[in-house]
Length: 134
Image (cartoon, rainbow, N blue to C red; front, side):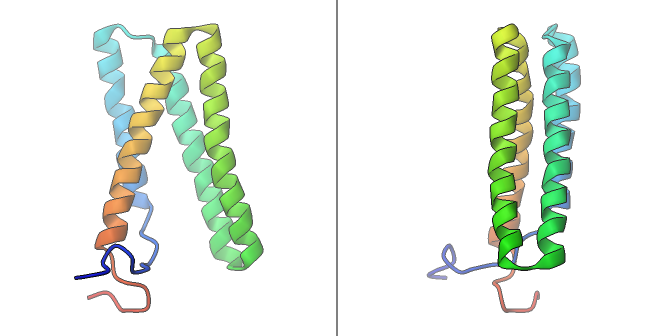
């Protein structure tokens, strides 16, 4: 099993991690309602999450349709832009109302963490690149 962390693998499916992140956003709503936290913060976090998912889907389709190096560069730049755009919106919200910004960052951050965690598990438990799935 030496080199299990360094072997290239196929890109995992993104549907299940995206569903998990969306479920985290949905499960955060009752917590916000029961805790009397700002619903505008939850709504902003949910909109940022859904917008980020939509933009990620667009980038994924762009990269898989063309399959060339330029599309990979555009996808990489788009992924960085997506993170920066979310950060700018959260900072702007926090500047106007600190608790709304913190709530939005919390909702988005938890959803992103769930998606990233499942994506990493799927990647490292998936088949090595060049081999068929067993």
